[in-house]
Image (cartoon, rainbow, N blue to C red; front, side, top):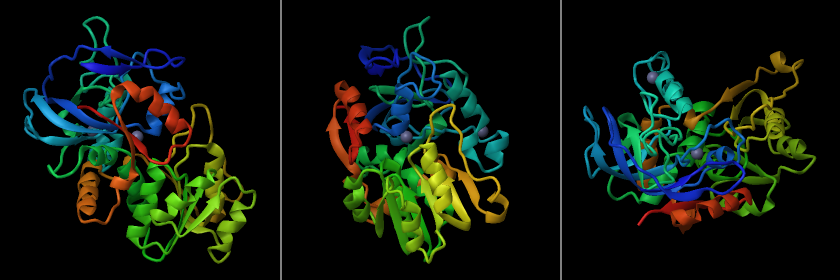
Amino acid sequence: MRAAVLRSFERDMDIEDVPVADPRDREVLVRIMATGVCASDLSTIRGKTSAALPLIPGHEAAGIVERVGSGVSKVQPGDRVVLSWAPNCGHCFYCQDSHPTLCDVYGGAASSGGLWDGTSRLGPIGAPIRHYSCVSSFAELAVVPETGCIKIDPDVPFAVAALVGCAVTTGFGAVINDAAVRAGDAIGIMGVGGVGINAIQAARLAGAETIIALDTNIGKAELARANGATHFINAADRDGLEQVRALTSGRGVDHMVECTGHPAAMSAAYAMTRPAGNVVIVGIAPKGTDLAVPAIGFPGSKKRIIGSIYGGGVPERDITKILALYRAGRLALDSQIGKRIGLAQVNDALKWLEQGVQARTIIEFA
Ligand SMILES: [Zn+2]
Ligand SMILES: [Zn+2]
């Protein structure tokens, strides 16, 4: 198959011919039809995380089941699927404790760059290429654990399904599961990107009265409003905190959802949240950085700082819920799709993301 292989953080990925091994027990071979280009891919490709190489990135994807390994009962060839980048085992401590995104078996696989047994199906024998989050969708084919396949209806476009594989579910779940926004609440969303737009839409669905979008790019104000924001604040303004308080009876918002991954933005999000409010941290910060909040006031603030990954709930349940809302016309997902390109342009797509492109670039495979 053709795949974009990351061999160095210093240069663009090459499109290479990569051998793919057959799916083993409880694994599925999926033909990728569409994949988004997400900020987490960018962080990994630019060397901001601790990923080992070589690696095929890409984790926001949808496709068609091509072949199944032994013991697979969840899907069959021809099924259309969204791929989960946090498939889970169902049996470990965290799976039993209702935190499937913290699955120990997945965690081990992801850090090994392999699948459940720690080995890779990608690359020639003796020179394996690492899987990325058990997906690796910058490629024509992917071998994934059975539990990473979530069946979708045939009328959902693959590009939309791909978005739901990461950005939509992450932003939606941060608001619905982790912040647990109630009707009438005030919420701030820091960062109007792929995740932030979906957090804004979820806040509107949940009935938030005041939805404040913040971004240092004021060109995103219109986009934020089109998705449901009631206010927009330039996050670079020195009086951003005062502006938030002025909109919330002087208190601060009930919830902040931080989507940028900048530690300074996380501290600002904390300050903008009212006492006893929720600070939901979604953005992935560069390695080696700390989240700083004033220690002296923390106990008395009764604020809750919540780490949120993949929407904080049960991804398969949430993805199914989100696609039902989309089909009912209650979540606007088509408008989030920007350029549609082929795999050969993947390096350009990463540059556009760095430049703050307004909508998601989707790589499609003919
Ligand atoms: Zn992502
Ligand atoms: Zn598990």
